[in-house]
Image (cartoon, rainbow, N blue to C red):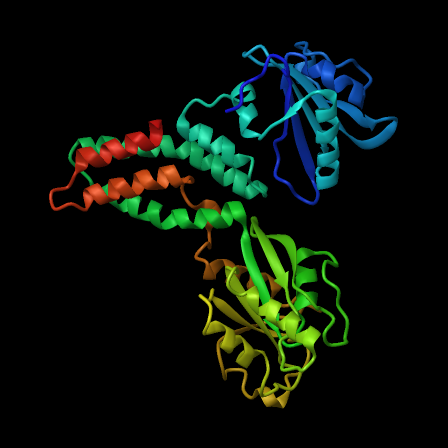
Length: 402
C-alpha cells in the first residue's frame, strides 16, 4: 500500500471500473484535498469537510482553463485517519476520466491505484472484507457487485460453523461445502473478467446483426454485401447480470482474395481465446459444400477448442432445401435477429454451457486465489486416510483471518 508522502500529500484514483459509459467515481484523499480540487470545479458552496458537507452532494462543473470538461456531483468529508476525502462523480467515459485525472495530477495530486486509497477511506474489518472491497472495484455490473457483497457477508459465518463442526469431530458438512467451493471458484473469472463469445459463420450469416441486438446498439456494421466485416471487432454487453464480450468476425468461406484470406485467418485466431463459440448458419441460404463447418473443423484440430453452440440464424425466413431436416446435424438453436425470436434463450444457453445458471442465487463461496487455496488445502486434509480435522479447521481459520 502506498503511504501519503509529506511533500505530496494528496492522492487520487478512479474507484470504478473503466467502462464506455455510466458514472465514474474519482476520489482524492489528503489533508488539502478540498483546496486542491476547488479550483478545478464550479460549485455554489465552497468545498470544505464540515459535518454538514459530509451529508451533501453538490452539483458541479469540472473546469479546465475555462472549458467545461464535464458536469457531475461532488462530496467532501473527513475520515478518522485525519484525511480529507473528495468524491468526484463524473460521467464514466474513459476520456473524461483520463482528463480529470490529468487535471488532478497537474494540480499536484499523485495518481495511484484504487487499492491505495481504501485503507484511508474504507478500512476493512477482516482480510475477507478487505479482499472483497478490492474486488468490488472490478465489478462491472451491479449483480456481480451484489454477489460479492453477499459472499463477504456469508463466508465468515459459514467458516465459523464449519470450523466448529471440524473441531467437534464431524467433517462431513465441511467436506461437502469445500468440494462445492472448489468447483465454484474457476467460475469467478466469468464474473470479474466477463464471458468472451466469438461469432463464426459464412458471410451474411447474421453475425453482425445479432451482435447489434445483443448489445442493443448499432455496434457492428451490417450490409447485404458479403465481406462487410474484414477484421474481428469486440463489443460489450450484459446478459443475466454478467459482463459479456461478443467478438464479430469475417465470414468463413473458401476464397483466393488475399485480403479476405487474412480476415478469415484472423477470425480463426479468435477461437482459442473464446469461452464459447457461436457457429451461425443461415438456414434460408444454400449450404455450400466448403462452408464454415469445414473451415471451422480444420481450425478445431489445431486449437484447444471452447464449447461450440450451433445457431440456425434468420429463422423468420423459410429454410433452404439444401439443409434437409431441421433435426439433422448437430443440435441447434433457432434465432432471428430481425424479430428477436430465440435471443433470450440464446443468452440462457451460453450461461448454461458454462454452468453458470442461477449464479446470482448461489451461496457465498471463495472469491480470491488465496481463499480457494485454503479450501483446497482443507479438502486435501480431509481426504487423508486418517481425516485431518484439526488441519482442515486450521486452513479454514487461515481463510477467514489471513
